[in-house]
Image (cartoon, rainbow, N blue to C red; front, side, top):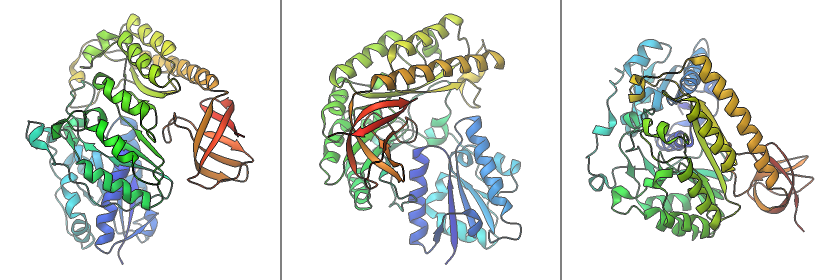
Length: 451
């Protein structure tokens, strides 16, 4: 059997793409291996979101290419967002990669790799604005996203499901819509069937992901379709927890908050991408809201679920960000009591409107603001974790070792929001364990099994 290794970088959406690609390859007779050095072909699913992610993608391609010298590896192929976004440009800059394939190659990925192994050369695609590929009317786009069967590349009790692809928002700092395309929802029946399959594979928590989950269903004619999908997923036997990621604050609505805070199995967890709190900066970002509106949204959520988890991301140093704007952001973070916050310094992304904005801050000032904001966020997250001491939690066990068990509560998203450890406890991966929080180490909580 021909051997292929899939190396995945970036977000959960990329991880789902890799599992769909893996399923296509396995069905065509490819043997999937974990390590690129053991494969005839290394397939690197790249990320093109920010500069650091692009660098990681290039490093992964170069590392895989090194195995071609006297090893089993015959070819290295780039796929994913960076490959789609740059195409020929990436091929010219990175001759170590034997091919750069775009999203349109995924349906024929097996034949493409077979041809590459046979020595055929592929002309790398010329990137295009994928927002122009689908019809403009959201309703006309119904069903445009077609999911593939999956082959799990990990064995843990948590898995993501893509509920949509693309984005119709036009944030001035973001290039994702140009290479991911216009927003297109998957059919609810497709998502439910995939969730059932994952549960059969041992998954106990599913995370619904997309570029903007609050838009789910708008192209199917129902902007409140997520409110119907969540209870339907909750009816699946042996599925213990459902989490929704990538929520747009401007699109949050009372009906969605009600469903997310009252439906059994749905985690009261709100991944809200605030990005800033100054109304003036948010307008330049081509986003909506301000500190007061965001605090009202948080108050609305906590009135329904006082212990709800909330995480967010913010960008500091955006063009035109004044000292007053920056202080508004810091004041908001201090008042918002968020469980986790990702802090990013602004950098120009080619193809975005913010590149041409005046009022650019110098790199040193941006770096100082990132450092100051990160210190504040670390302190505030620690305080928020301390507030949870005494709470009763239910953790999904994800790790078991000699010292005890570790997992996450309802307020913690996978990989990014900390964990809960119970020392000297015995349980199996995938179990749900009731416990009481007795301490914290930053965002990580320490608990004991509740009697």
